[in-house]
Amino acid sequence: MRRVLGILAVLFLFVLGAAQAQAGVDVRVDIAAQRMKVTTSDGEVHDWKISSGRTGFRSPNGVYRPTRLERSWYSRKYGGAMPHAVFFRGGYAIHGTTAVGALGRPASHGCIRLHPANAAKLFALVRKHGAGQTRIALNGAATDNLSRFAKASTTSKAKFAKAPPSKQKIAKAKHRSQDSTIAQQRQGNGWEAARGQILLRPALPASVYGYQPYYPSGYGWR
Image (cartoon, rainbow, N blue to C red; front, side, top):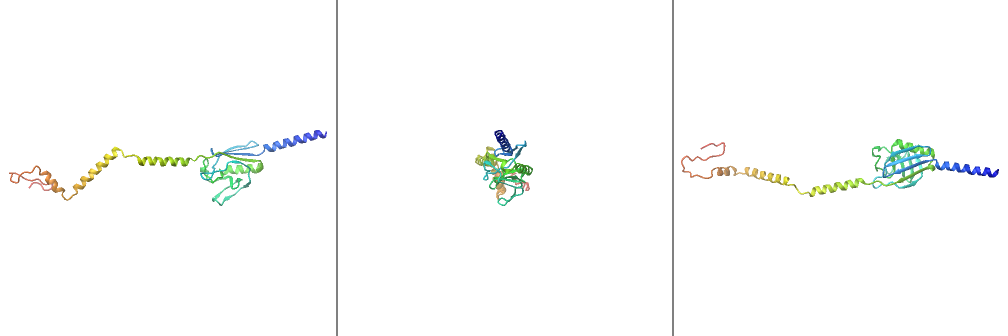
């Protein structure tokens, strides 16, 4: 009889331990995809957009347990509100943000940002199941597209600066230069005299009968 009771007690503890092992919250953060998947032992499943650490502020990969929960927290270091913060490593936390337009791309100083409503939901789940039954896993790395675009833009400008001028541009420049030269000559003090000399060629002797020199318009015949 005692043996049967002992076996039943062992089975009870085994079932209880298995149930406790299955209970909890599983948080998986895919930094490359900028997504977070949350599953619970009672069947809840959530898939949310996040913002992880931007360039120079990488989010730490690894597997963690929540260290503390703060419903209302403010970062003195970076000067920002962190509502419903679930801290998992030192000052790193999963928390809500007002910069919801940046969700889906790296934007934080290393924390994992969520929409305020999603952060409140995760906070409630961790409190319900307990920090000891919550697993937080961060994996992957964000691509640095900004540097690639900036580098490509710089190369493009350099090529454009080195490109030789086209034939059409050279022809237009020569034409403008010629027009400028003619305009300067026309504005010179000896233009009227030079034009008179041109119109008098070939010159005729002054004694020729009927010779009447032609002067510029406005003077008429003399």
